[in-house]
Length: 576
Ligand code: PRX
Image (cartoon, rainbow, N blue to C red; front, side, top):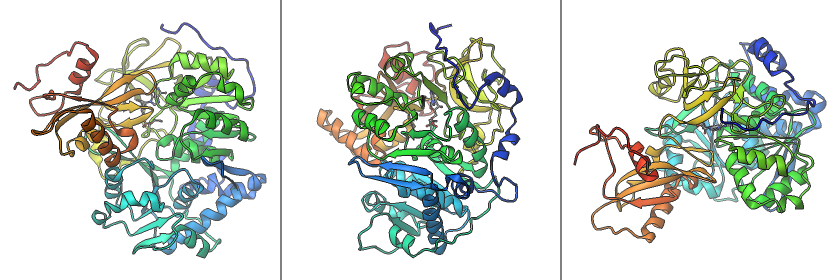
């Protein structure tokens, strides 16, 4: 096996004491008993996550410790979040938002984002968080496909929505956080609505299978897919948070992810609050010193972050770590991309703690494979399947492969937080289950003799840049909208810091000359149109983009050429 070293741990108190035994004995039904109100006639994740804590000793416990880039701070107890979300829920109901309606969010990581997501769940509506770096094209795609009835945003971000508003007839209301005045038709002030609203609210009890949130994610082809999750996900959220993130009542937890990505929604809102945990939200951008100061100031004990951030911290150097008191930290987890052993070794040295990698996807809705506090870590491995999860390595026909063999990572369907649909696209949903009896993850991996899983790569062309999933097709489509570009092919190029960067090969239209200025112009064009994280950091001008006879871009060939590797079977390459 590839690993050289295993990190053994000294036993301390943790949530999951005996992994092997728990895996054998585990049943999802049992987890439902941790909730106050789990019945098929009525549940609500917001009741379990917020309201129920307000009739216990947690009522005055801090739920949210918020800080921004300029050091402004706000604190909300569970009772504060209940009150604010009840008022907003009343306001939403008041304007005619009903169960099943989509309410989208386009907000920075401000307290109103968190309160809104709770309020939307309380009325049985469906929340659609969107990352604040999205451009007008990405926003339009999501609002159109979901037929969102309302959007909660800020006046500044709303400018990006305005460009597409004409094409969004279903969007009835735009609720603006921090609007001064001059509200246009259909626009409402978040603050005035909250101030007017009553505090007395009766939560909407829904069926566990009723929809809770939609997050759009990229595949290889087509527009982003609306991965749809349900209230029943709370079973997975609750227990994975407890056992993988190892959260205990007195912890102060910080998840660095934005709720526009699934980690930020599941483990930056629901998971910790279902467990009654105090969590820190820092709304600023990544900055090594700022991040360490957040840990020091708020005495963060459990930290959930991503490999690219850890690699950036490693690059920022060990000297700055000495300036901060990080002694509160007791547990670190990471997700989203491969966590290289070098980072784990570095973390052991500077933080005196191992970093626990775990693996999951927007579609799985919760952590599926993980390193646990009680299990030794094999650096470079994603760990072992969560209790109740059956993960295997299979071949193209669905046959299970023995340990050590590379193949497709697949899961036995049926865990509580599995995606329930792709919004308005049954075919795309069915694609996940095309191998009979399995949910196909789209990743390749292998399992070792001890049952640890090792990530190998994507089985498709989806790019993972700094932990963000980007579909090459979306970038290619946006590129060809640029007046200078005739054709484009996009690949993920390996990068030491970001895992992959986006590289575009472009063919120019006649009359356009390649230049550094044009490259910059194209990059800005994509940032505005699509998203700040989805622009090609590298652009190569080329005479042609290799395609199959049926016109599909052969990204595999582009990638091999770029890396100087053999291009493999070219028999379907277009002859021209
Ligand atoms: O390729 C895998 C990679 O991220 C994909 C899922 O992306 P997304 O839906 O955006 O969710 C990311 C955060 C949950 C996976 O198919 N991925 C996720 N975790 C890991 C990973 N690759 C390697 N190691 C991981 N721990």
